[in-house]
Length: 576
Image (cartoon, rainbow, N blue to C red; front, top):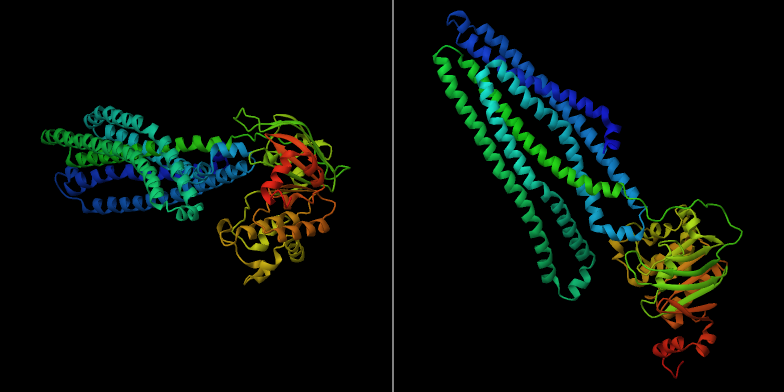
């Protein structure tokens, strides 16, 4: 945390200095009040004669001290917020920057809901922790020990009375913090779960309504929220028990001071002003102790959040970046050499002994049953995952040796699930190339068969897209995603079952336009429909993570039983 604090240390130091000034003004007030009561009102130093001039003079001094203390307190708040907010801002940006470097398995391990909670709620808790530490720790310690020091200077007996009670107060605080501290980490984990349910249900609201599962989801969310509140209440009950106990001890101390002071006043050992000052110092000490309780509560919660934030900040990308960032002699050549792959944490092989070479400008289609490894195979090309064994080469260079930015600039990917952003349609397409002109965006949309429905919209390419593309149909989202990939003008185009929502005529027009638009690009098409792949230069048939056959549509129809079975299941034996 020091890495962030030291950047804004001058603000924290100024905040500390102003806080010292504010507390010192508070500590000087009871001494002046004693003089006003004893010398000004009772006139104990003048044989019982009141001294109104002294009352006015000391009263004005007290007002000036209060004003100066208020100024110091305000400036302390300003610099505390400047340090805390800036520290939180830097942490939040660094967390997000680090998340962007994480591999897919790392993101899956944390979970979207947990990452959102850590970057928002947890960092807010850390901000509060820093602010409370800078402001609260100085004020609390100065007020507590300063009040005790002035109490001893004022009257030694009163000081010993307070000192005897102090260990009981500290013991009560330590016990409550010991009981509450483990609950803070559980509280944040339960908040993660509540956020996860919220995210799932809002994104899947259509299927919830279609299946009439609203009541079930209300119960699930209610149960998770009840657990969160139950833990929160345990924390609050612990501190609700502590505050009255500490208050009782401190007011008991005030009663003992009054009792002892009454005897001393009767015997002429002390004065009423001294007793008033002692009670004020005791009240300040009480406030200091109660602030210390809240401070330790915030520190405990902030530290629990810091450990969660630290996991994100200190997380190292699992996929180490290579150093190769030069241009290659060949463009769009892909080669798999004895590649095997299994997902992190799983022993089951998804791909086994894959050998395949794709030439520049070639169109390769990949077919097979669900779960045979088609998507896993194409995910190795842009290095979304690393192989368990074997090598994936792009233009003759191992993908592990590439600088990831250089590698992925060569490749355009259209995923199974179309991901759109809550911006205009034109901006969504321009994600493929941010410097693209309007005519380039339109040309890519024409190739993707998207220009007709975009132009027909009320605002055309300036039409805003609802969250997660909810304002568009599945086919429209797929075509916008394809336009984004086409606009990138990459050497390698990967379509991972990204035309499943298109009708056959639109799909046929798309591939025909794509071939004319970028004939030199290497195209890899993962698909389930025979009509989607039959015109490819070669078709790769996969089964159980292995390549069982490679050839043209005609060759596979004659020689591959798996391909024949797929044809029969889709178009019937007689038509085939």
